[in-house]
Every structure is written in structure tokens, then in C-alpha cells.
Image 1 (cartoon, rainbow, N blue to C red):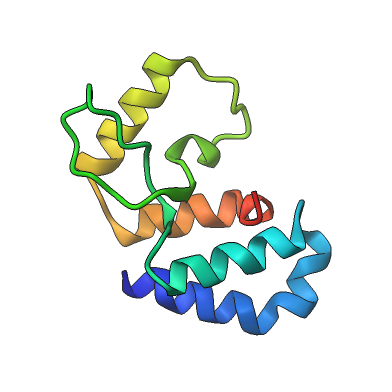
Image 2 (cartoon, rainbow, N blue to C red):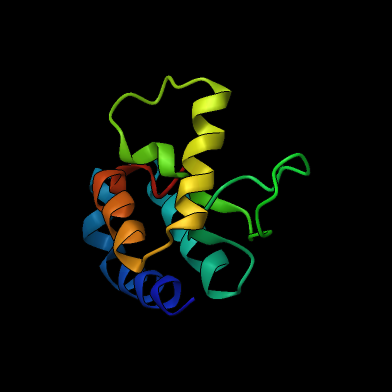
Length: 106
């Protein structure tokens, strides 16, 4: 949660500059405020009742976004979500955000 808050504040402050490189600059600003209010998180996985993973807030990015090839099947996405939850590290979130920062407005 601390990473979410710090990143959201940093993105709001840097929005006038970073907005030029976003796919949706207003979307990034909206997502940052939703993260600040606790309605969303930057990185997570879908809450699927079939998965036996802890529930998370709706996420802006998914572990799949780390890869340049986002055309993965559902089985691969489920496995990535499982490994993300099992081996969670803040560094993993930072890595996903670093590689998919242009999608923060999606």
C-alpha cells in the first residue's frame, strides 16, 4: 500500500510532464486519485472465484504487462497471477510498473 501511495503522489506531481507519454494522460491522473482513495492498486490480478488467491483491489496493471508480448492465453495469465501472489516482492511491482509505465492511464 505504501508503494501505491508514494507512486500515486509522485505521478500526480509529475503528471504535467509524464502525461505527454501516456496512452491516456487523463486516465493516469484518474487512476492515481483512485489509488490514493484506496479504490484501486497499481499492480495486481483479477479477483477470480476459481483461483485460490487472496482478493485484491482492482488493478491498473497485471503481471502480464511486464512482458512486451501481451497476447498470452488465460492459462498463462492465471499462472503469472499465481506466481505473482506466491512470490510477492515490492521489486516485482516496481519492475512491472517500469516496463508498463505508459499503460498507467489504461
